[in-house]
Image 1 (cartoon, rainbow, N blue to C red):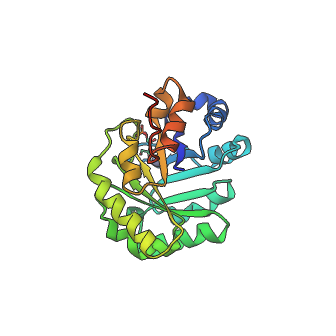
Image 2: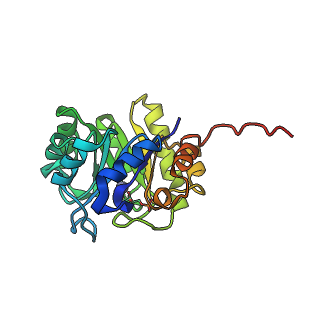
Image 3: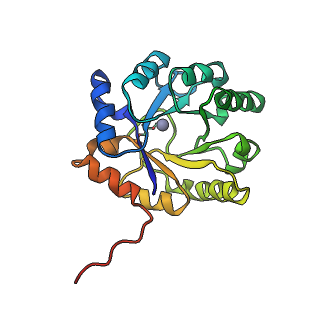
Length: 226
Ligand code: DX5
Ligand code: ZN
């Protein structure tokens, strides 16, 4: 089954405890937390104290997506704050420091993720795959929710997911940006294991049905009775 990670970027920030509980009640698998520093991306969201507070109230694992410069400086603190998955951007530092960041996350008991902006080719992730529990393929430019899904990222998604399988690695492949009922099937058809959804999840009239539909992506449709 596909896993679903609703992004609280589209939540009511004055009611995060209520909204993470609502996310759990829909049957989702993770809570996706977008951390932005105003440097790596032109937006600022939330940081370590909020992740720590969320980890005290969330019954789902926190899937923390760091859109910050030189993430090696802070990954350890995010794991200690209670993040289950900590994902750093490949473009945010030197290869040596990215390697150190991924190793630090794992050494502290977290799951290490590596994220690629749309302009970064799949092959750039290859030297790091053994260090990854998750590879996050962005289908929008990171920084803001509510952007249009980039279908041109599907070949990259497929290249990464095939390489992970070819090497027999356990890493899961996650897609983030513009994921909706209209775009989920193509993501899964190209190898996505985890789907992040922000605006489409929060706008859905029936969020439980939305979550279930995404989780069932790629499964054959039941035959109609008539
Ligand atoms: C964008 C963030 C996404 C964002 C997705 O930089 O990484 O996680 O919340 O929002 P939607 O689903 O609205 O594109
Ligand atoms: Zn994200």
